[in-house]
Image (cartoon, rainbow, N blue to C red; front, top):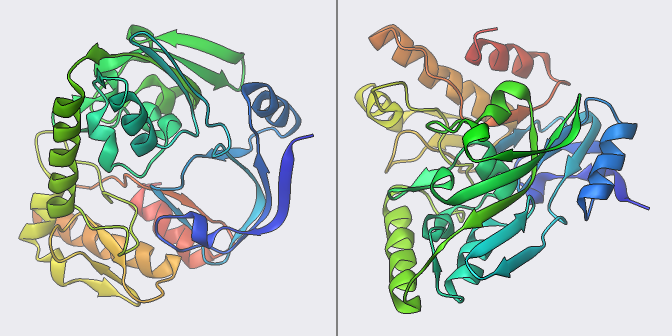
Length: 299
């Protein structure tokens, strides 16, 4: 029987440390359990490590799936397979101890493999698409489907998953054998870079707020409008990079969405560029939040 909980308080599982109660949360431990849940609950929403997700302080009246207990890793020579719920830093650490290189950039990401493959996560001149061999996904129409790297149609922070609403369940990578010390040095450099360019999770946040527009930088545009001075309730723009919002003082989801809308509006007014959210929002119970999220997504 699949583990599930009712009226689940989700706040402390999110990197933003924001969120109310979810009516029902399922925790599958395998692809088989996951498929069973999806067949019995049409259109259920699926999340991984909740590292790029803002959940309404007013909660969510539906059911969701969290893949955090789908966390198996297997290694055979240079081939590595990881379930969707495996955290990026954990996988980077495990393969480094085997002298395998190609996932060093994951050491600084709080996300899980499912989300990182879904969005083709990248940093420090490395990307998921560099080493991915194939991904097993769930298609609401076809069920379990396996896609090769070329079939995943990777682009900057994109894959076919967004367009076809696919859910990544596991991924296979082919890595390169290297000296363990060199790999660990690279990971240390990546952690240092992250420390200087992104807020520590001691300041709750969920990573970059807006995608980079084509040929431009969201951070640069937000810097130019002096977004680092912006705040709303308990949320504020991080002083070291304008494309990050931190939960500074018991911020609510409305505080964050309102701040995002302030940032979005000022950039649009100044440069006629409409920034696109990089984060995901789960809500529905608060009309003001719903309206802000629709405006941010131009719906």
